[in-house]
Image (cartoon, rainbow, N blue to C red):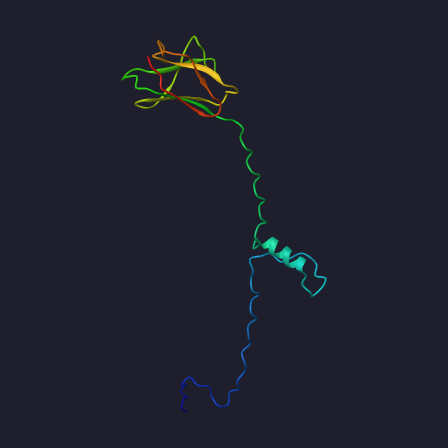
Length: 158
């Protein structure tokens, strides 16, 4: 008896049986299923809004604009003394203004080789002052009067 050789093709007498199709797995979603009962097949706007809110795919509500900053009523009174007092010397200010005394001077800030500055925000009325080199040598002439809320420039002589 001869053995039949197989060529890989089914024999004519074999019946073709359709293969069973496997069920597709349910598509997984990143979101957990809703636990809310379904009451209608219609989708309402409220349901869409709730779904967007829970999924994080919604725009945050617009922020309210910040209230405008209050306008400051504080004014700065500045004193500028235009004089070169020489290397190693300091210019002081004395007077009756806020933070000043006629007995002891307050050092002024050197802004440049011939400009010295002092300022305050505590002045509420004009005040008298004088400038003093090294808190010892007073400027000559009358006291200077500072106007409030502006820059006051003087050219003292010694």
